[in-house]
Image (cartoon, rainbow, N blue to C red; front, top):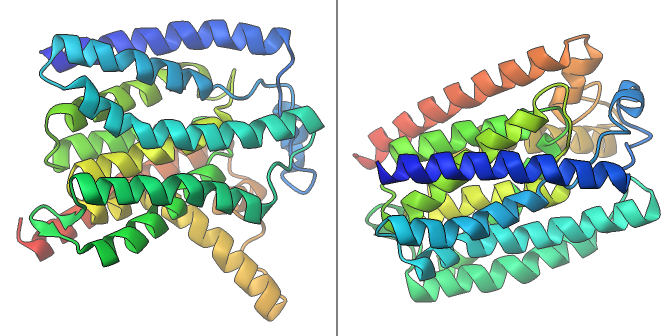
Length: 318
């Protein structure tokens, strides 16, 4: 019952703090410019919506450390290790958001600068995890450091960018994270601090939907999408199942693959695969409503997570 108490407190805390933060953002007119080459209707409907709501994720996550440590057997030090990567990832996202806001532009870091910043946090963290506890591909299958570091770093950076491109419709990224965290808690052998960290992450994303579901009162921004990506990566690694990033990031993976396919087709063959990428914009241009796209993508994510997790469990004999 302790985890239900922590889950409930974090939900209330996130909703309360986010409400106050939205007021502050509106007073200071903290909005991010919509991309001129994006969906034109977004210029009218989303340009006045405040962003950087993901900052509250950091505050609520930090508050959960003494809460979980005081009301459960989770060690505060281990909880800090769990949250280290999501919070550092969020810092990179915040820097990107701040550049956009200060310049009144939809463009933040240049791509190479952003990749460099991601590498600066990912590589030291992955090496720290490898040296302190090791990284397992699957429970009981520990990877050698020479394989674990590049593989985990590649998947972590991929997840950071995949969640970022998914966060384009109200509730899409946060709702998918609710599904991912639920799947992780039901499927992965999370124990102690990792379990309570995942419970807190589930509560944060579920509560954020209170304000982010259509029509959104706030967007999470890059700070929020990077936090969510870091949360999913940390959950998989602390669950001793690096390969779980494929099921847990199923819809995010489809989104980033759609971007890659589009760019390859344009630059390699002078053609388009989709009307616009990432793929959720393709369906917008086909005339699907935002609610229909989000709901159907959630269903695809849930089904993909369930099918791939069963396949992996069968393959690895668990």
